[in-house]
Image (cartoon, rainbow, N blue to C red):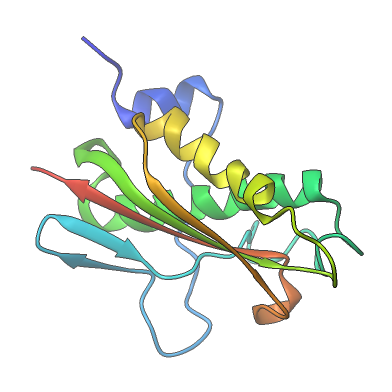
Length: 152
């Protein structure tokens, strides 16, 4: 029998953080039918951003990929709070926003940090967008949305 998402997360040496408190008038995730749609998740660790700035300037692409992984872990926490991570059957879409310095075009490699974590924990493949933007909330380098299907 294959491992559950929770078991795969533990095998990676990871635990889900507390769900990040919203910064404005929204909720961390919404259930629609058999899907969970997360709000954009920042790479908050204990309520703070480990790095701020633009990718390709103040933040290296490699560090940004690690931050995208952290943001995806935060998205998994929001999903877990709604339906339980072990009830997730697959991720179907990830959207990554990357605060990009002028001329930076490596957004797909940055968002791979999130995609790789989601694939390690949930398995399968997903659709994805990796978008370069001028600014993100609180100066964060990345923001990640993860959308999944579940069954109970």
